[in-house]
Length: 68
Image 1: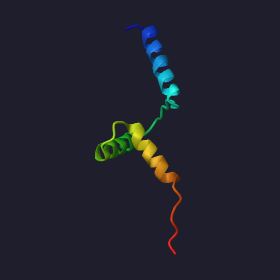
Image 2: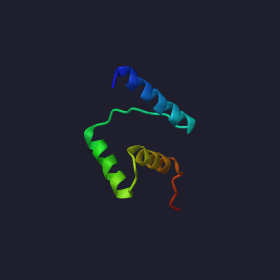
Image 3: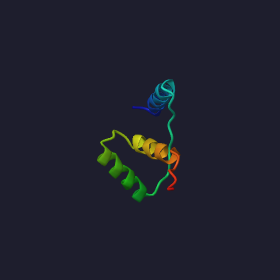
Image 4: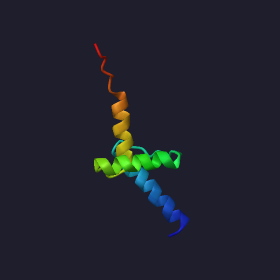
């Protein structure tokens, strides 16, 4: 496979993501953080790290309940 083929495949992948309303994000994380994400992925039976991150972000967006 040539570099041009790889580039074309990457562009096609990004177009498919965009058609679903998604975008690709590359992050730089410490190995320990990636291991934690992988652990959560396995425990929750999720297919990808992205699903773990989306879950965590949604949980963080939920309003905190105040203790009366």
